[in-house]
Image (cartoon, rainbow, N blue to C red; front, side):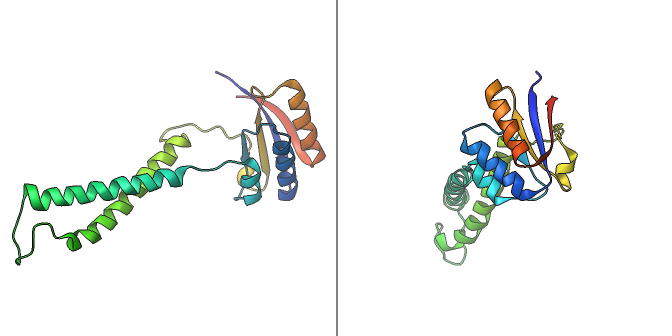
Length: 172
């Protein structure tokens, strides 16, 4: 299935930020912005909020409970060993391994969640809209399928007004 995109290339970071803010200020859709380095103003202007930290919290909660349950089951129910007169359920000895394994579980589960949400997996062929975005250019990509003809003209006009050095339509 092919889709069409309007691609605007900018030389200057400040021009890009102003264009993104104006486009988003008029509630027009932007599919993605590609920059050679992170620009926090663009992230805020795009209005995207990550829910990864909420997932990480629940992964940590689940991980801690699962590790404590496993340690309790192993040391009290499945394989109780009396060593040094200590009780079978010796919680202080569980603390370090619980912390370490909880951090491990949160890290791996968050990485898997991020990769799944970002559609990153081994062997995936990614479409590079403009290779110069990895060097010195700033690129705005707008999906033409999600915008009406009037909106497309408005977006193109905003890009031109803010100094886009190149505006092109591309079929992917």
